[in-house]
Image 1 (cartoon, rainbow, N blue to C red):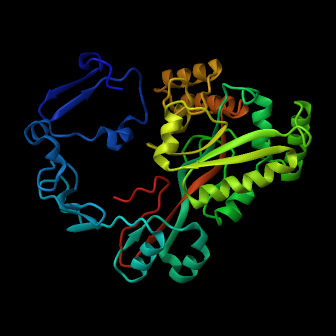
Image 2 (tube, one colour):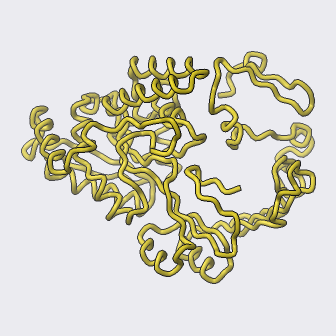
Image 3 (cartoon, rainbow, N blue to C red):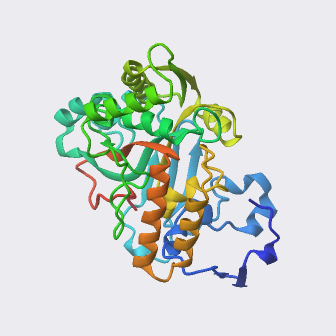
Length: 382
């Protein structure tokens, strides 16, 4: 947050090239965290000398495999192989060009024309056509990410866990995955997606029920709480601009209508949407998503802790906090720690602190000219 004094941070520069961090407890994912962009080192002398120009091509000091050669806004970014990189002998590419393209159809055309070799922004509605056209060049697989709805747990009527569970139960995730997202997503019933070694995600207890049975059970709960066709439950879904997000909300609107839930929708651009959530603005239900910063359940469960800035639902549960604290203290015992995290997720799911809907999958177009592409759940391709 920038509020703590440097001497209180348990970090220090041992010498000009060594940075030391003292941890509160053994943290299995710490080394992987260091690959996140928030931990990249910056050159203090360069910033002090150049001011805001330190990030420009020719000025930027970095320690990766490539250095910035050109940056033309809205046109391209060019990076070239760094001669001073410690593993330069193993870097096979001399130049990489990035082309920002807002129109996804244009990006597809450029790929087809051979102008670009890799594209990771695929129009979901074109999946079948793209598979037929590009065959094995279209790569699809599981990705550590969860598409979910935050639900305002600290205001009526959403402070009622039975009500939250009824709404979650009634949503047909199979339909969302197959029809809305054209099988480019998987139905999701837990906050932690599958794919983390040694961890078993805590699924919603209705996950194995048929959709018809779920809807019947949800209707009974709503009737018990006084809601139905003659007294509909009002619910607003906020989402950020995207045809896929809109279509998801529309599908859920139609699914909940027969249960006596009157759903309205509010669309804003991404900056406004997340700004509203981060500033603790009022809402009922809001679209959100989380991609793993590191391959560990804590990345997904930490966002629902009381103090987390990403806890849009304002979920506040003492048992959950205690379970997460226990897991943190068990850092040196991997199996015990995973069991503690599983227990924490069980609380989160049973209390419906969030409504998981779908698990992400990666969708990449990779030219047959590209060698060394290796699919992985983090969708990272160095």
